[in-house]
Every structure is written in C-alpha cells, then in structure tokens.
Length: 508
Image (cartoon, rainbow, N blue to C red):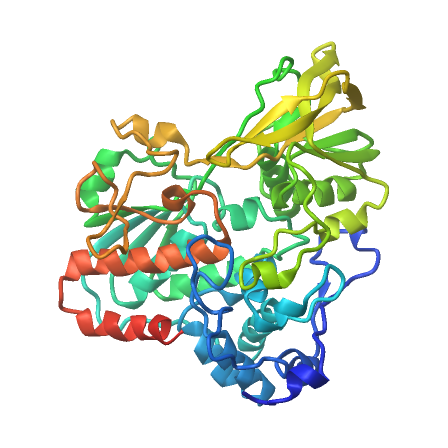
C-alpha cells in the first residue's frame, strides 16, 4: 500500500474527452499524465484485505475475470515502478490495452471505495485508466517485446477465429513452442475488436502491433479463410493435432415484426463492421449502410446500441432515437445493498453525450415496420408493461391505446447475440446447446473446453463457449483453453510450467 491515507486525501481523475471529436474517427479519450496517475489514481488504492476488484467472479457482476493483481500494479504505479507494474499485469493479461480501453470495468464496482459512489460521484480507484496507462508505457519504452519459445514441440494447432479469445490462446501456445495457425474469414485480424468496436473507442493500431508481436513469436495468421467454406472440418482434423473454435457469438438476435424485410433495416454489426472497414480502407461488396441525413432508430440499449449512436452521429444523422424494451434503470442505488457486485444503474456513454438532441425511450415494443417502395419509413411502436414470471424471466405486455410512430429511414437492431453461427457446427452433425458450443464441467468443477461430440482434439473458448460476454472473459477463456490444449498435447511433461503460470491467479 503506497500511501495509507491516500484514499482520504486524493480523488480519482478521469480521462477527458477531446473537443469536436465527432468530426473524425480518432479515439476520443485523452491520456492522463504520469504524475496524475502516480499521485492520484494509484495513490487511493487501499490494498484491501480481501481485494474484490481482483476476484474472478463467473457471473460478470464484479471483480476481474482475468484475476489481475490490481492492488499490486496500483502500488507499483504509485512508487513510479512502471516496469514492475507491467510485469505484474503481464502475468494475467495478454492485452491490457484492449481491456484498458473497452472493458466496462466491473473491477471498479468491486473496489471498496465504490461503497461510497453515487450516480455523479465515483470514488472507486480508476483501475481501467491505470491498466491502459501501463500498456501505453510498456509500448512507449519498448518493454513489450516478443517472447519466443526456446524449443518447438512440433505440434500443430489450428485456432478458428481471431478475436480476443483466439489471440490470447494463440499467443500462449506459441510461447511454449507449439506451431499455431490462426484462421480468419475476414481480411484483417481481431474479430469484434476490429469490426465491432468503433475506431473512436479503440484505435486499430493497438491490434496491429499485437499481431506483429505474435507473428514474431511464431504465430501464423491466415486471412480470407472461412472454416466450412474454404477449409473443411475434415481437413482440420487431418492436418492439426488440436483445433480450437474461438468464433465468437456472431448470430444476432432478430426482431421478426411485420415489415422486417423492408430495406433500411440492418443488424448493428452490419452497420458497425462496414464503417470499420471503410475507416481502414478495407474493401467490401455490400451496399453502403449510411446514416447521413437520415432519421435513425436504434433498437437496443446496450453497448452495441451506444456504438451505433456514436457512429451515426459521425456519419451525420439527421436525428437519432434509441428505444429499449426493458425499464429504465434507477439513477442510483444504495451501494451498501449491492457492493461488491456491479451496480445496475442508469448510465450514459460518451455517444449519448455527443448527441444531446437524441430521443431515448424505455419500455417500448416494436409492433410493425412501415415503408414505401420497399424501404422503411416509420416504426409503429407501443408501450409495454414488464412483468416477471416465477423464474424471473420478463414478459412484455402491451399497454392498451399506447401506440405511437417513430420516423425511421434507417433502423439498427442492437439486441444482443444468440451465440455462434449454428451452420458452422450443424453441417457436421453437432447441435449447439443453449446457443453455445457444447462443453461440460470437469469432475473438479473447472471449465472443460473440449467440444462435446467432436472428439478429444477439438476445443472451444470465448463467447462461442460461454455466450456473449466481456473482452476480459474472452482473454481468460483463451488462456484457460491454451492450458488445456497443451496438457492434451504434452501430457504431464509441462505440469510444472502450468503450476507456475497458475500461481498468479491463485495469489490474486
């Protein structure tokens, strides 16, 4: 604990936003100075007896899924020992710049100081900002370098998908000597990090330099290769000693209301990925989806919906309306009632602040899409009463005589994801279980990454296995899956290696 009274004397400092940021696609956050990080943001860490910020809780509601030793790297930052801070975070997190930019930071909800947070006064340690700063320092100082295996095992591993789970898995396996091949159906790598997260939230150069590092470590990246189309399951089985599916939760939830087939209604990821390709100069064959001079309606109130708002604003949308079928969350909660769990309260993102004229509504159901000459013009909506059954599942009951219309030239469906594309597995006789790649728990209750029904050499990790989740859980899934694959390939020969690798998580 660097400063025992720091939490009484200091307050956290937030990264500020650039002025006039909606006129371009560059990242909008402004980094803090080292002095601000050392004397404020790290100084208030309390080095708690039970650091809930670091505890990996599987329900995503608190703590760090990676088990980052947050209190240790905070203390290192406070003392100006950035090299130690980098070493500490490198034990558990392959890509702190990813989590430092886009993770919603449930670790901060578990901070002891979060007991005193209010809707407009956040006292928790600014862990996310500290994490991003460590990665930035490491790259600036040349301390993040390739870690090349001293010996090769001769085992070949295929990783299908290059999102955060696939990248973490590939990097860990390459560093211990396996030959790793990452197959990606798109022309560039990173999965939803590249195509789903807008440029203004995370610069794609952060991904590019990690790809270069991993190539130096021996990972081979193969673009424009879709498994099931360009490469069959039989070929994977024949050519590789192990295969890992990290394809993500790509299948979006649809809204089968009358008029759904009208032009101008798109899934959010169609809209976001196209703009990401446009920003990177990557070609695409689909017709342009643009919000310029249009009345845009975003259906869905989560992060993906927020990203659509920020993207539509930068494209020059005439108006933006966001509707959500669930009730508005409370403006504040008694933190003593929920801590150390994440507080489900009403929040605004940067995209909401960028669009002060937007209309944001809750408990709104979509009754029908109405159009002319094959294109959507408006949406017939209605207010709904949200009732829950005995299991807690919501039922949406329309309120009589509550119908209203919204103008809509462009409708973006941002209602979450069902799971991985079912055709990839069903074509080979494998049924998804609960919209996830089927897996099971081991006898000791730990995660089993083997794909049930496909033989011992097939594994899965990330959103494909656990369902739609956060980038921190994707990285953790990739690391755990790498450990299981290595045990499958090498048996007990490297048990001591994995014991050391797991010690960081146990310490956390």
